[in-house]
Length: 616
Image (tube, rainbow, N blue to C red):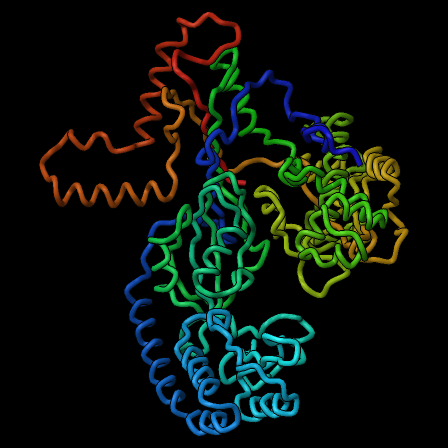
């Protein structure tokens, strides 16, 4: 597999623009703060970080809960004295003291069982005695589990004692289901004592800078002593960005998370509330982007204005961006192609894993990552099909044979319904879409249980459908293809890669397109609430857009100044104010453009940034 050159947009099918305007050039994400993402929830509310402290009511509820837990633990801590004395007679004083310490940790823990250390008993060369110790724990400490480890010499073994994954005083209920899931019981991720009137999930706004979602939650989880999979979220946000999104976590107190803010670097949490249900992937309307392009070069301001206005009116081709195809030495879609061909050894070599049982080694990779490769190949086909659609038929009209989302009661002929692309036939649970880029979120809710049909001559005469309704499939077993020439693109490209989109050459369903339902994605997308402006700047390190944290800091600074420096008037003008910057920058641009005669130049005498804000 060739991997020598850097992946570029044409390599993954990104070939067309929606307009023929000359456009302009600029630098995207020169600073991570040039790309700001705010999630938009299902009610259309833009998610923002506005407060870092839990509400007073939540603080009071936390104290009430902690007091209740403390009372229960005081009563529980006395209940094992007799058992500990029996254990002392079986193993001796030192092991009894170790056990007593472990139980004390279990009673005082505030996080999950992961925060409680295990103990190792004294070396024991008597197998019958070790068996007696194991049985003692089974009979008297059902919330503890034991296993055997190597001792200091070949003739001895040691018994290790730790909390059962079911948590303190858990009687192994639902152990069969837990074993089948291969995970810990639900309640073990949070406090074992919880007020009945509170929602069991704590929802908060996660603000992060230059970190991806999983990385940020991993850091928070480690600080809390819980696993990162305990968190729920609607979608991941780009790493090289400043983003704010909703997150839920099971049975955690807001005060514990708020206390982390002073220790967190590039991460903040706030806007806490308790809710009844946790977030799941795809549960969002979309995202609001504030994008700054620096170092803008154009032949005139009119060129920039025309291109920006066109974006607002006509939108863009809804390509999967380069992020979808990974940042490793081998793009995800190429690995996906090897998996679809059943070439396990080749795929494993691409992933730089150890040789051996290649298929089993692949399955050891987290499911999220495994599926990312197959979805990468689907995205590769989709991009090429979208480019072909624009090249053959343009971007301003529907043509016969196009696929569209149905309107009306969904009873038209030739319809098919599929769920979100996050599902496949090989799993009972929903596929983790954490690899999706931000723009993918818009269609997730819309695609669920949505009917798709082929445009007919009758549809053309009625004018019921516009180019905004046109979709293309992500290949799978439950999708249909356009009946015009675009379908050929899918099959021709797949054939070049020795892949059949209708038959699988191996029996591993997980890596087979024919075992996946497939989905649909709009070919053209228009931004909502789109606005833009030109800004002039001299300092490349100066932020040109306000983040949520900037706004919080400004509010705090303003309050302090009002309290401590009343009456100083204009001396406060040094505070950062992006709105003022925008106005003054536009004025200076207007005054200086006539003096620059270059045919292709930076607009104005200062560097210029193109700043746009849109919902997607």
